[in-house]
Length: 218
Image (cartoon, rainbow, N blue to C red):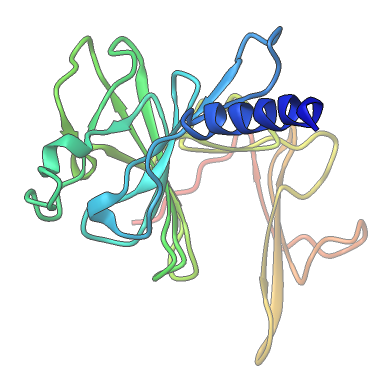
């Protein structure tokens, strides 16, 4: 009977030790050994954020229920005084003040998925998310990109750039439903081409501007 006590006590000791430790060990030989977590709660007053490694953070905003995913952006919950005393402010600080913060917010009310950026420029001062730059938004009502947008290229040099290899059509406007119609646009070494009703290789070209042609309107 005495021999049964030793493994039982060992199990209790192991359980007790890990119950006091909020770290989850993945691999003792792994560079990222610990997955550290803080308090997790549905109540903002007791909530904190999950931090994975040095830069990745996840959490909830102050007096809203919106969540966020951050890189090099840590929400300073200590500023709320534990009671949301700063109202609707959401103040972030950097993990590395030489870098740029990226905060992504999935909004379950409006269905928007928005990205914000902020360059810390060697400062570790708190910055409200409202003062971040809104870089892009995807949503059911509106979507936009406040940067250069490329289609067919990963390195656009213009606000909107389309690169298409060996194809006559680069842009198509298509109206469905009542009074439907289609217009195709394309460019090549000769100039700009425009087809009403779409281009099928044999369609009638309604409009053409050559490389040496000039058109003035107004």
